[in-house]
Amino acid sequence: MSTLAGKHLVLGLSGGIAAYKSAELCRALVKAGATVQVVMTQAAEQFMTAVTLQALSGRPVYTSQWDPREANNMAHINLSREADAIVVAPASADFMSKLLHGGADELLSLMCLARPLDSVPLIVAPAMNREMWSNPATQRNVAQLRADGVHVLDVGQGDQACGETGDGRMLEAEEILQELEAFFTPKLLAGKSVLVTAGPTYEAIDPVRGITNLSSGKMGFAIARAAQMAGAQVTLVAGPVHLPTPRGVGRVNVQSAQQMQHAVMQHVERAHVFIATAAVADWRPAQAADQKIKKDGSGQTPQLAFVENPDILATVAQSSRALSGQLFCVGFAAESHDLLAHATAKRQRKGVPLLVGNIGPATFGQDDNALLLVDEKGARELPHASKQALAFDLVADIARRLT
Ligand code: CTP
Image (tube, rainbow, N blue to C red; front, side, top):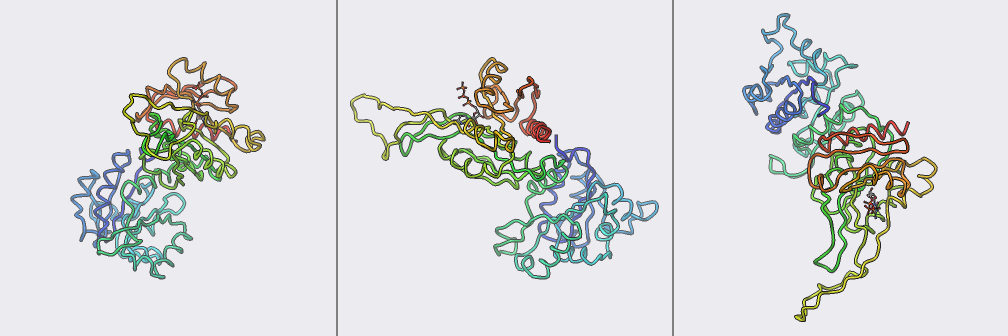
């Protein structure tokens, strides 16, 4: 379930071509379970109609502080008192300048000024031409708004509606959604650094072939996202998978188990938690051929010799930081049967305080899973749910173990 479920958000639109993305955002927020009250400036109405946003939000849109629907004629007070947060997307350069100076000549800025500072956060998603964005006036305004406690989101980079290319695009609806979900997530891992491995490894036989496995990386990516949303600084060492990097997560792409080990060793010194979800190949070809191995017509198959890969988790679990309790290690076990027995034995063999078991064939590539958390005291089941929901539960469980 999204952290936005049950939240009441005021979605404010100021004038900018990025307003078309706000329709998608409105839809995504409603889908995530939030109620959305849209407020538009007159300039925003040049880009989108109130009808569109009313249809998407399921609520009449407010565009004027003189709206007679409000019995006391104080829309700016009423709307802001009900909200869990005000989200202005797009926030134009002009609108941010107005916010900065406490301007209040139309409903949206008036409402932002009138909001209770302690209980109604203001989140803005800037959108403008790259020159406007980089102008010292805008940058000054952004810095001052942040100092005033406004949560100013980053801008995107790329082609702009004006035909220029650079910084200043509004984030995509999905990215803003992720930012808002993170905003409402309890910061259980604030100040912590988390290192996650995910996905399969790929062990080359020759330049065009290799050995890999069916791990999709989804569980590890979901855990990285949940940890980042919980306030941790997250590094994700990913084997070859085509999954988008969760917002705010630092990603290191690797192919082989040896590369994965190298990347882990580079980052583990700063980590407080190491979560090994990767399905690391146990063996690799002893020698990867420099050139493609060709059929020679004799019907003879090539003879492949294997060597064992380093056990990354077991190595990290034996490091001085892990043994002294500065680093908390979590292992995963993908089993096909006898989950509790195998997971219990694997926990001891790997030397980790927590081992998370799951049935591999049932979950590889799927969006849902069920987990069995095994520690020194016994086992606890996290029943069948989406991988993202399980990741939030697992992160909360790990956070409790750190305190
Ligand atoms: N792991 C690792 N490096 C390896 C192998 C596994 O870091 N070379 C980690 C995985 O990321 C996971 C756990 O160890 O957290 C799973 O171990 P696994 O390899 O599945 O277990 P094995 O010890 O190989 O046991 P078995 O072959 O009996 O399943």
